[in-house]
Image (cartoon, rainbow, N blue to C red; front, side, top):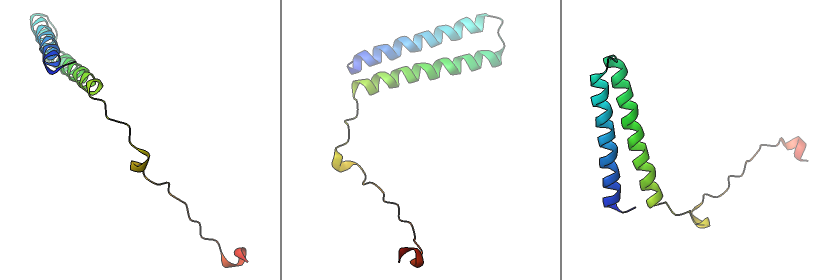
Amino acid sequence: MEASGLQGRADRLAACVEGLAAALHESCISEESASRLLSHASTAALQALTVELLLEHPEPAPDAADEPTALVARVAVPVEAAA
């Protein structure tokens, strides 16, 4: 998805959240509940856009040379047991 497509999606999601805000304002829902619902809706919209952006530009898999070397556990062995 190109940047203008992502911007269009962001605009549509923002309009949906604004529509929800207007509907909640007109209803008899408590201010606290309305605020919580709008917070969740805004978070979901942001997460949806983040997923789309990540899918548009996925991070390349690391090369084997970039991976950390395996850690080797060293255990102290008593001298008597080693002999």
